[in-house]
Image 1 (cartoon, rainbow, N blue to C red):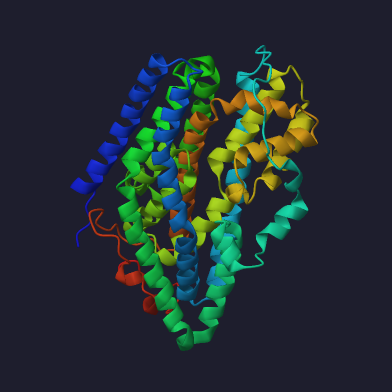
Image 2: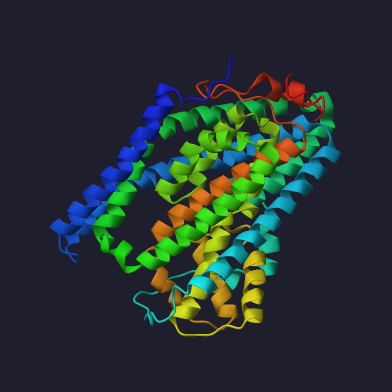
Length: 445
């Protein structure tokens, strides 16, 4: 099938419907906010029902995540048939993740010190932080949480790190079984295909989810929340755009002009994650688009789940930016040494946060506590956290897509573009039988 660089009518319609949902959500939310008093119970009830669309959508997405991650990692590792290649690719992935995390944290630290968004604000906490379980966010706890006591419990909780550990061990074990493990590989491959088909069905309700999520927030908070925190929002998004430019620039060094094609292919996952303020919302679709971009599933199936635990670039920038912003808002001066120590603390404590409720806020609260800063300062961010989360979630998708494509290219495994209009099915190159031949595959095969 000849590759095409245009979206299919169905894909274009879905993108248009999602954009329409965003615009409609803002308009309906604004009308509701103007119609009802802020304390009117009817407004809260309507907003709660509007949010139901987004809640159902995110539940459906989370339903897909665990079996999809398990199936893709098992299939990917078993298909490699080369433990040396697995170690090499894993090493490259971790090197990218650590470098990108330090870059994101450092960029946030530099920008918040240059722009000083919190200086002179003298905010007072207007809400309680809530139960953030800060005491559990220690290095010992993090290490223990990596290893599952039960794969069923890990899947029930969507604990990506624990699923990742089990899946890697299962994939290596199945690969060692040889032909006896072939039925398990085929079963995992079929499960991944099934999850992607289910994703296609779930995606049809995405416009309603986007509409409900934005309408609910605007109805309760009003457009004024963007004006009140306008400077912080604009400066933070400026930082995200700069981070995008850096990530795309690095991607261009490896992918050339094809990096622009990658951005075009991943528009829907980016838009979904932005609209729903959830990186997970774009993950199933991201697998599809990377398939079409030419990334073998055995590579994306290994790197993407790992990236969703260790490579949250947007969240990294946000955490350093927000932590120093809170200190500035309370008029607390932090020496450069203390800020660097905070950066390193965020670097370690943020790994594996994907399964923690209100993940970024948890890490920020833990860091503020460790450095004796006012934890209640998080209340300053709660009102606009959804809007900030939209940007950082979209950035997480870009960072993981770029990492996966670059590492694939560095291995000489990036294949020709596939038709973006094609159905979501495994390509012939990605079948378990082909993958067991090893990693030295002719991209034109």
